[in-house]
Image (cartoon, rainbow, N blue to C red; front, top):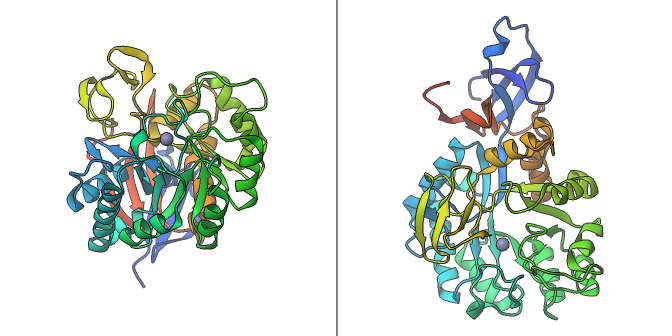
Length: 390
Ligand SMILES: [Zn+2]
């Protein structure tokens, strides 16, 4: 038995001061306390879970110069941003590069308990997606192919069986059988980067697909008014909907509709790229070429300000964006990024800040336009503490 730790903060749902007792990695009690100094207390909330992380702070999960040390560093940096569980996201690439990147992440998990505990699995986004321009997004067309179970098994072996989610397009005839194979092994199938028809979407949902990846992005510029694959996925109650909440990828009206239609099945993802966390500037990138990261966190092609080059915000920033735009309250926005993804993944963290739940916790201060993470606990262990409080 480890010693009991007591953490005091304002419960993120009620704003009431509480004392949270933690022992052996679990929350053992939550007791309301009288605090004369409650205005100085940080909020306490469950740790954030990000299903889609391409990179952060200069480190790119899709760059073959990835190392075990970089995976460890990004894990620490995400903990400092309140993310206690995440899915490194490997996108479309050559067969050998996908294997290489997966094996590096697997090695990092083998070498560090903390990395292994924070990486809730790997998200393979592609290469089994649509080859059509628009749905294809920034993925490399050369490597797009039909769902192939044999190939997938090689990759999953390279990852040490850590692939937890696959984003594919139902438009491939092979998608239904492939989805069944994944689901029988506990791997989540998500629909994304797709040009699929109503019947094709219905067929993979029947086969067990349970998610839409960044619904509303990775699409054609222009769609038939109806039917189209956005309506079809919105209307399908079997599908949770991931969305990018950086304030640039979707207009507020679309986010509002997704929130209303999908309720507890909406999941906020960052889809952050390696330039997230970097200072505003002009950058050269391998995929997008010359890109600009603006002061307000928009990442776009240098010569086309309307063409986004990925998301440069992490979950805490997306949460603030939702709250500031009056799309969610603070507790709701946190649940979109903590409870709802845990439920999709089947993790005990879906219990949130309750007795018996894993002590994956964040302490944070709310400032104008931002959240400051003051401390992060992973399984009851203090893994990040910020030096100053402003
Ligand atoms: Zn994508």
